[in-house]
Image (cartoon, rainbow, N blue to C red; front, side, top):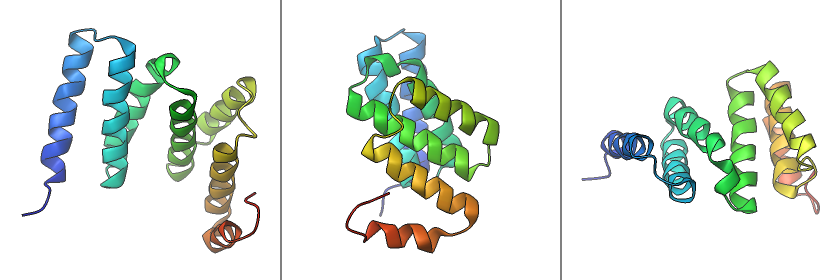
Length: 134
């Protein structure tokens, strides 16, 4: 049989609880949260992703710049998809304060969130085939 995503998510949840209870250092904890968040997204579990990304935000200081950018980008998409406008504005302000608004990944995510907000996903997809992304 195939992979039982619910079983894996339950295992990740248990591991994350152990990480919290045992006060595991941030570098390892961030890896646990990141892998859990990616798995949840890959399997369409938005609520589980939210738990993971919330935990990731608490240990983001221990992450590499690439992981920080990935987490910020995923958070922006999550906030747009779940229509959390005030939180989205706050996240954008944080990115501006960290001078990340013009990072290529964040620019791409911002274009995607604009397209989602405006109900124009096809226009966004067309920009992906353009010589230079927005």
